[in-house]
Every structure is written in structure tokens, then in C-alpha cells.
Image (tube, rainbow, N blue to C red; front, top):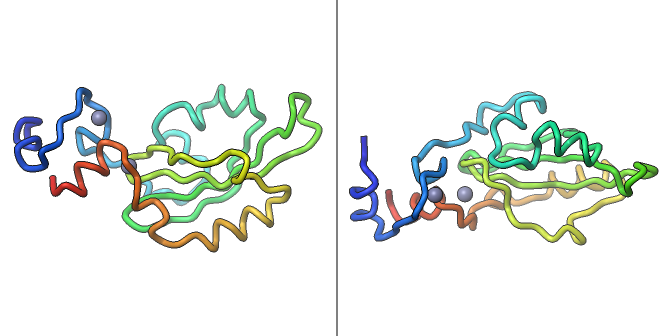
Length: 141
Ligand SMILES: [Zn+2]
Ligand SMILES: [Zn+2]
């Protein structure tokens, strides 16, 4: 087992936390084969049951990307009364960290449009992730 001090010596990086990335625990997104597995694997509350209930969010499909990262297509309520739906593609790195995205740009009117965007993503779409785990990996942990 590598200690934090050893990692700092190798990478020159030091983070004041023990997040999944710092500990080197991947989210194991490579093994996802069904949309129902995704909420338990990604970090944070993005796909938690309460978040999904609040936004009437549904996970529709996904695509594996390079390095164990994942693209997920979801649909959610377009307004408070759920009178129309919007569609999004969100990306998670191998540690399950949600990637920054522009909510106004990453918003499609149909599932088909979002599917097209997801299919067209470059395989390395998540390679610039700056979460602790990805930074440590790039620095040669
Ligand atoms: Zn960390
Ligand atoms: Zn990352």
C-alpha cells in the first residue's frame, strides 16, 4: 500500500482530503452494463434518488469512453411542473467525478439529438479532468 507521503514525493501534489481519487479507488465505470448501476458508482449527489426524484430525472443510456470514463444520457423535467422534457449528456471520469459542463449548451430537445451528441463524443472527451485522482494519475502516481 502506498502512503500519502509516498504519493506526494512522486507527484509533487498534495491534497487536503481523502476523496476517492486521492485514495486511488476508481469508480469501476468500465463494468457498467445497465443504467441502474450508474447512481451507485458516480460520486456526489448528481444521480442520487432524491436528486432524480426532484428533477424527474431518468437515465436513458450510456457510453464507455477511454480510461474508464463514462458518458451518460439523461432526461429531466424542463420546468417545475414537468410539462416538457429536456435531454442532456453528462460525463464522469474514472473516479466518478462529474465534469464541468455548460447547462445552457448541453441541453437538447429530444433524446435522439442527445444520442447523436453522445455518439459523436471523442473517446478522450474526459481526458482533461482535474479531479484529485486524475491529477495524481497524470503526475505519475
Ligand atoms: Zn482528494
Ligand atoms: Zn477525474
